[in-house]
Image (cartoon, rainbow, N blue to C red):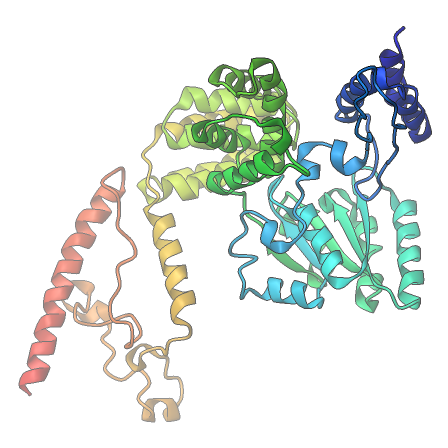
Amino acid sequence: MQASDTCGQLLLNNNIAQRVRGIAAARSGRLERECQRVCQRWANTALWNVAPTQALECSVSKRKRPDSVTPDLLHVDRSAMGPLAERMRPRTLDDMVGQKRLLAPDSALRRAVESGRVHSMILWGPPGCGKTTLALLLAHYADAEFNAISAVLSGLPEVRQVLAEAAQRFAGGRRTVLFVDEVHRFNKAQQDAFLPHIERGTILFVGATTENPSFELNSALLSRCRVHVLEGVSPQDIVEALQRALHDAERGLGQQTIQVSEASLLEIASAADGDVRRALTLLEIAAELATGEGGEITPRTLLQVLADRTRRFDKNGEQFYDQISALHKSVRSSNPDAALYWLTRMLDGGCDPTYLARRLTRMAIEDIGLADPRAQGMALEAWDIYERLGSPEGELAFAQLVLYLASTAKSNAGYAAFNQARAEVRATGTQEVPLHLRNAPTKLMKTLGYGQDYQYDHDAEGGIALDQTGFPDAMGERVYYNPMPRGMEIKLKEKLDRLRETRGQARAEKRGSKSQT
């Protein structure tokens, strides 16, 4: 066995001391370069199991090569040899890509973080959107100790030990940011263990979850924390993160002079589906393969990298969100066969059927809407059937629902109208209710004009008081809902178009009569 192979075998061992000895075994100038290559290869494997806050440093003594060239000092540490996504973790809030709404310069969260006055919170968002990074930055800005535990790996005894250590630090005048990854996986008793410590201020609790907190977390824990919603990062923002990694010579790939087109970067970003960590991992894999092609990430290399990943399914992991996205988009594009395929893939991979029930119900509301209102009822019925039958019999109800959702008429007009109305409400603030629309149960209210001039629509011709306004006086009339010429919305569109035209004429006549008087 060669010295370099011995080095690699020692690096495979989880004992840090043996890793150091493995590096030291190649101290001669003749083996330095090969040692670097072997160390880099093994350090990038999952067996390089060092916590992010730890670092391993060692050096190889300088020796003269036969050509009298003095080699550089070999410097091996966690920050330089960890995965690219870990090395490129943002160091300031400005370094974070995406989350422009949550971390805007004037946002409440940003002001709280930068001032060090942070609060206990739940960070809800998809993988790779910046939850862990934001927690680390919270501790940095607050000058607090950072402790991280995972709900997957930690039990109640470890939780109690971490809380006891935090209490000791609190008594000594130092705060602790306790980051709990995948907090939704803790049961009720484990979640309750944090409550008194959050109340006393012993810890600044930061829980990260990819699941809806209102479904997965205790109401007692939610009442003590503020929920911040992080969004999947857009492809354009992910491209920005990839470009930083390519040009960063200290932590990224800047020393490798990787050649890659903007189109290829955008393709990587799109494949990541809002996950910056995954995008950086894909870029790192592509860069490794590109070393044999003159440092260029070719379309062929990229196809190989992306194709390899689409064949894997990781329950509630990286590939999970790719496949739910494929299911949703297949339903939206009226492709029942593709939708059924993705549903079957997810069920076969172990996806929680109740999660699929929620997503399918959302599709019925968001993408089908009033074009076929029956779809919403069918979604709830399929959910109920599954709850009664369980797996595998109840899964057939989901299969039939997916086929119906993909085959029926589609409209997002209701979804778009709601978003437009909500945006206007937030922009215009609290507008007064017009007097004629107010309730007048008392004599005083009637004296003040409440309900005055209100027209009872059932007494009007055609059952509609056409000249009566419904919006606040300061706003005037608005149009949010524009039905699509599909499904049941065809009739709704015809009716509303006629009604809006007639209303406009009636109001114009009313204004004209008022001006004459």
